[in-house]
Length: 110
Image (cartoon, rainbow, N blue to C red; front, side, top):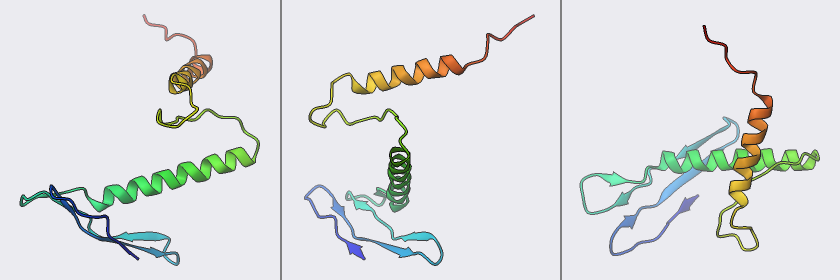
């Protein structure tokens, strides 16, 4: 399927194609690039594919953990309504607490 992402006076974002090939379990990603009026183009399609795959893994992992009844902390964009401003700081604090609880004793030096 082809997707056209739009145009602006400052830059032109060209179309890309993403083809699903389930029989090969891989994605084929076309070349996405932004023409900024220079010889070099920016915004590689491989980056978009990597982010898509990473976020798909995060979503699937979170869904499976939640379905199995596991409690876990998640990072949330500060732009999401109803989320406390210090939410992500509390997630970091929880991670640090768990990290130090599991850490072995201090390293002995001679």
